[in-house]
Length: 371
Image (cartoon, rainbow, N blue to C red):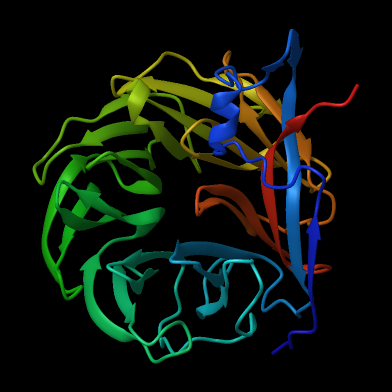
């Protein structure tokens, strides 16, 4: 067990000039890599606007992280890579740590994957142990004793596994027969389960909210990549490609009726376009020798991250031509996939853990590029 020693907050010159800042639109910022100032076009690039780090002895060399945030409180859950006990801590709205990151939570199971969400103001997790996904309610917060509210047959989860379907909350899981939805009641009890995307056994799964519906992408044991728009609690029709999109992540822009998928593919980080819920042809390379791909949509732009050959986290955004404009973050060097790219209160954050720095949180934004 490590102990929390310090928190350091650094603020860069770019301040709060975030991609979600409405002032960018007021300046005519419709092209994500240029704005007009007078008669001069100013190119924008990714920048670090603030960063916080916490010196703490990591609970494992490599971890899987799950992030849940609402009402100014962000909860971070971790399990050791390959499976183990659940740990967790919280951050306030200034990203100052408010509980010990080395605290093991009062959950008896050893999980191989974990997901978290805030539902109706309550913190809820789901973790897979063996062939079962267990759902726990942290009604007293992350340090309180959780209540086990249900379980369902499953072998994998997405990072965003609790999503809304019309007016109901669903738990999205992957299993030996494809992707399923399980109804989550008003008291967080689990209800009926429906197989909505039949396929061979699911090896990795990613989901995103799409208005009041759900988008899912997954890879199967026979190396096929599936995409499905789940619009109801009924069996659906997934489209699929022979492209192996293992460890894929999906994000969507409902205003443009589109989504983007990034994944670790042949040669490095690759990108697939989804338009009108159809996979758009072949994937295209974004970066060679890259792993641990992530993607989020902040309301204006797709942000993408990965770990490069040096072990650094690289973060950037897709411009109007879907080119990745990116930068490396100094400091964090996570082992394996020990980091997450998340949108917290409309802002893009990278949460990571490594053996040297402990935990860190880095806020990304756009700033004028300097020649």
